[in-house]
Length: 199
Image 1 (cartoon, rainbow, N blue to C red):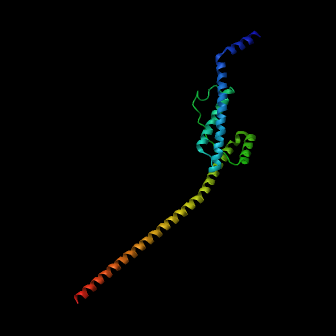
Image 2: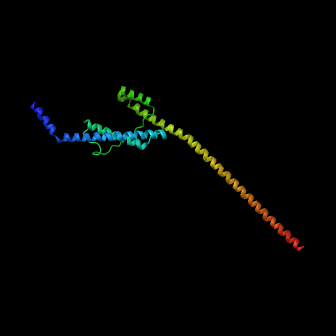
Image 3: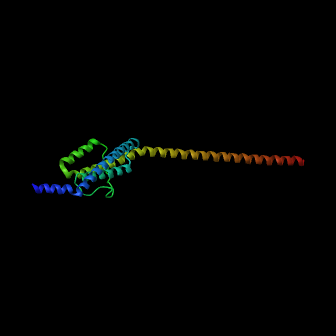
């Protein structure tokens, strides 16, 4: 019994344990601040999704990094890791993931992963790839009518420019023809006056 009490006293006096507790409290505060940042990030991504039809890649990368950072903090404060997170180690670079926009399908894939374990990890990755390709197709389809409209507008502008050039050339030709006629008439008058003067 005395040995147990001595080990408890020894543990209480150990400064490394108290320092870890101080770090844990500090990282709990950091975790709270990061959660507020994640709320703002979530709102910004929602606005981007509403107004542009897709998320913002830079915010997605920041979100991935923050998610990894939160993971590191949680591992440290739950004694699952001895390495202290940022600023005592480099800020993590999260790997961004393309997620599905259809929540029911995503939930179905997640359920199947839970039921069959790691065997379906490849299915989830394939699903993510398909969701990414689907999103690219939707973006391409949205851009296609815009491209067609732009092409039509450019064609119309070119046609108008050609018509204007043709009209200007025609006016110039008519002006030149009138000037030539006027010059010919002047010469003819001058010749007549000369002939009549000589008579």
